[in-house]
Image (cartoon, rainbow, N blue to C red; front, side, top):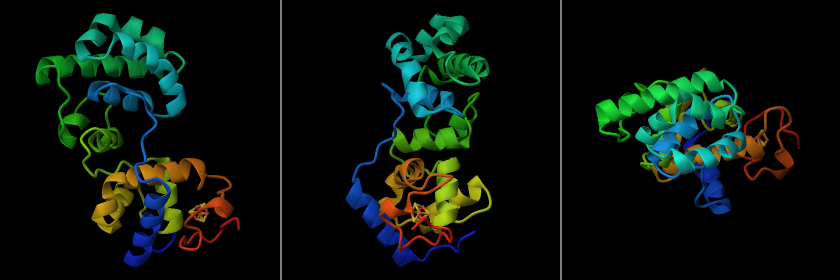
Length: 214
Ligand code: SF4
C-alpha cells in the first residue's frame, strides 16, 4: 500500500485532472433523479454501457416510481434481462418504487440514510446519487477508485469506507465535488487494473505506485 500523499502533491494531482477535464461527468444515462437511482442500482457488477443500452427504452416508458409499478416486475425484466443479476435487481427496483410512492410521495429522498434504506441501494449508490444529482461532495468508492486511491497514495485505506474517508479528509474542498468522477474515469481508462497506462498518465511523476509501467 502506498503512503498517504501530502497536501501539495494531491492539490497538483487535482489541478491536472481539472485542467484536462473541468467538468467530468458520470456515464450512466438518466432523465431525472428517480431514473438515476434505478440506473445506479442496475449498474452493480455491470458496465455503464450495458446498463445504458437497456435503460434507454425503459426510461421512455417508466421514468417515475408509479410508472415503474404500472409496468410491473415482468415488464421490467423484459427490458433489463441483458444485465447481470437482473431478477434480483428487478425485485429491488419494484420494491423501492413502492416505498417511494408510499413513504416519500413519489419523490426520491436526499439523505444518505434514507437512500440507503431503499432495497438495492447501498452506501456507494447513495453517494453516487448525492453527488451526481444534488451536487453534494459525497465520495462513492468503487473498485476503480479503491485501486487508484491505494496505488497512487491519493486516498489510502484498507476498505472502501476507509478510502471514502481518506478522500473526504485529503482532497482539497474546491476539488471535492468532482473527485469521484475524476478518479473513476482515471481508473476506468488509464490506471486500469492489470496493466496501467502509466506512459499516458498525467500524474505519473506524482503517483507513488511502485510498479509503474514506464
Ligand atoms: S502512473 Fe500508472 S499507476 Fe500511477 S496513476 Fe498513473 S496509470 Fe496509475
